[in-house]
Length: 170
Picture (cartoon, helix red, strand yellow):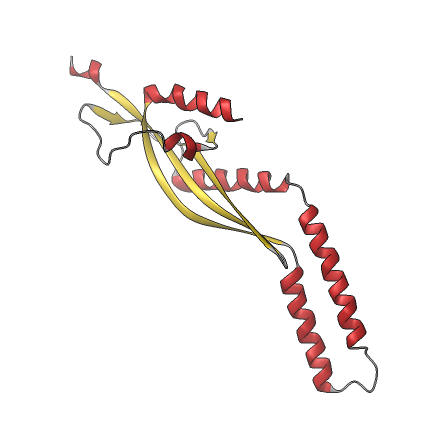
C-alpha cells in the first residue's frame, strides 16, 4: 500500500532574536528559539541542531504535513513569553550599575547648574535638555528585535534526534 511508505513532517517555527541591553553602554546577544507547532514545546538552541541537517525546499513525494495545533501568532506569543521570562531571570547588575551612573550624572548636572533666582531662561532650558539626555542615555532598557524567522518541517523520525540534542544542551 502506498500509505505505508508515507511519513509525516512536523512543523517547527524558529526565530532568531537580537537582544540589546542598552544604557550608556550596549551589549547584544542573539537568542535562537523554536517551537513545535504540534506540541507547543519550546526548543532551544534549535539553530545548532538545524544547521547540521540537510534541508530541501520541496516536500518529497509520498510525504504529508502533520496538522498544526498552534497558529503562528500563538507560537510567537509563547516564544515572546518564554524569552521575557528568560531575560527577567538574568543578572540585573548591569542595570543597577547603569542607574548608579545615572544618579552620578544627575548630581554633576545639578552641581553645574545650581538653581537659584539668578539662573537665566537659557541656562534653565540647557539644564532640562541635559537631564533629558542623560535619562535617555543612562536608563537601562532591553530591546528585542527579530533578525529572521522560518518555518521548518522535520521528518517525524528526526524528532528523537532533535529531542536528544535538546536534552544534551540543557
